[in-house]
Length: 210
Image 1 (cartoon, rainbow, N blue to C red):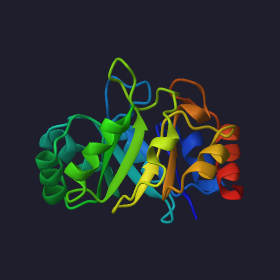
Image 2: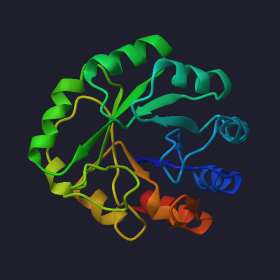
Image 3: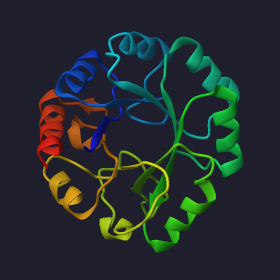
């Protein structure tokens, strides 16, 4: 079964829509520059409405220890997602210091980007493969990468497929690849940072029937 993560949740309506439709993970973005940013108090409130069957994932980008600690002091997260330029040493430190599973995002544009898998494989619990854009951005861009780059790839850790996924293309993606989980953000929004409950439900139903 392909598990499902709805990322960039920042309202109670979106949280309840994801949980009730059967999401396995919900993502909270602690990156100030993101349109999906959520502050500590709102995150604390929303995680209070997450059923035990759903895991809360905190997304960080090049955050220092104090920033992460302040979040964890108030927000009960189950996993840390690192979406910046954190090198393997930094990832290992974060995993050991905070005692939570760590997922590292690997932006993908071509085959050379897959070399990062070997560098991180011994320090992460999960990988997330996302789209790398020409300007270096990744995450929540709404753009997909060439899924065939991952076809036949043996990844020793569980991994999530992200990048431009939505209810209209997810069945095609799952026909090409067999990820452990899929991650969607902009594909279930009406505008950047504004989740749509109907789109969330449709995406989850499409994944479960694929």
